[in-house]
Length: 226
Length: 363
Image 1: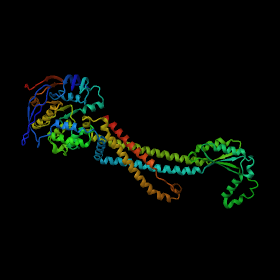
Image 2: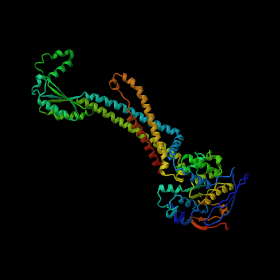
Image 3: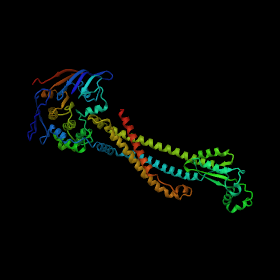
Image 4: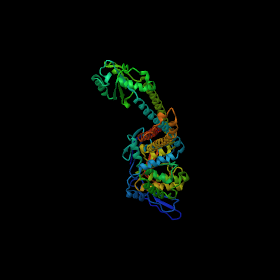
């Protein structure tokens, strides 16, 4: 699904965010990207959905070489990806159900069908009764579940989540990971940037550790259990 | 495989890992307290239903229109101001067109009255007494008729010229007593041009061509009046063109400004649209629709107002002594012009929108 080779990212004038990153993630994997703030986690993730371009090296996602991708290619790539952000990025003037249906709207799915799907998706994240509410009327955890519902509704091949639980309490954190794990169990590749070591240890899944832009560890089972 | 376990009241959920790393087994146990009232729908089931429904992607056009309408309804004030500006420009344009159209019509009527009079030499035989044309004059008449700009050539004999002069003098026709025997008025060929070609240049061309002709004594036409009419019309057309250009440019600018404001107000939404995979054209289309809508609505409103103004001023103008001749038959613009104005307004809206999107995408 993801293949990074000798990837370097330098922000002008000379701030190096990623140095010689090599990383392979297979289809259906669940991988954590861990590291302190400023380690390069977000930059790495942003390269994968073409929000940034690598300064050098090769970034291949879903068979697409992102160095030579055009704007239509980027749009097509993102339609196969679900992205979840720490700050949710919900549309403030649209209802919860419209936010969830938005992922299907840009794909040209008929309104009736996308609303039926969005309602079911809301039921899947436990927010069926908040369909008509505006995002700002929801708690942080609920907003993140809406964001995840939007990211999942079109059955993406890859979920990229950048600190998805950064603003959430423990209960909501667990709920969010429950959804991500369920998507992964259905075959979706999941990549999560997190500095929440307790959840990483708890789930005991493959974890790539970044430090000052370099991968300093790639652990199959960071919790040590099999 | 994930295994969730729900207890009816406390909603304790236990998940046994994901597929995790390829080849890996259940990873760990996560216990969460989830606020749900019913067992939730499984993602896998949901996605399968979507595949089973097999409905083709559709409704994109309607979604774009709905999106544009949402943008418009969120900025009613700026949209209203823009529509009013376009309407004012269209009102101005329409009234100018009505005036131009009727002025041209009136001037064409005036021009139709203008003739080129080709006075023949006294030495031309036969026509003086019997009023018929010699072969030479007939040949000249035929030659004149062959010109595409000429609609009619009439021979006026010396006697006819005298009769016409008498009727012009009316009660003072007695002044011409005794001239029947020695008529000083020359015979002439009166050349009428086709109204659509009756320009100052055509008259001048004809005069130049026949002034030195062996049969011709003199060629005359009302050069000065025609020149004045032509200059006045050209001046009016130039002023009208300038006003229309100002109207069109300010409409484009204002629509571009409104759309730019809408783009900035929705920049978060645009960013999210990009993230979920919307193409450039999908992102831009609602704003293009918005611009076209503003142009069309402004155009329609301007046309309605101009119709009202036209009805309102037609009566009083027709009463005016000075303008009666011009205004009596004043017509409103035709359906084709109305369609052209509406299409133009839509194009102006689209141009404003394209300009705004282009400007916005640079930031």
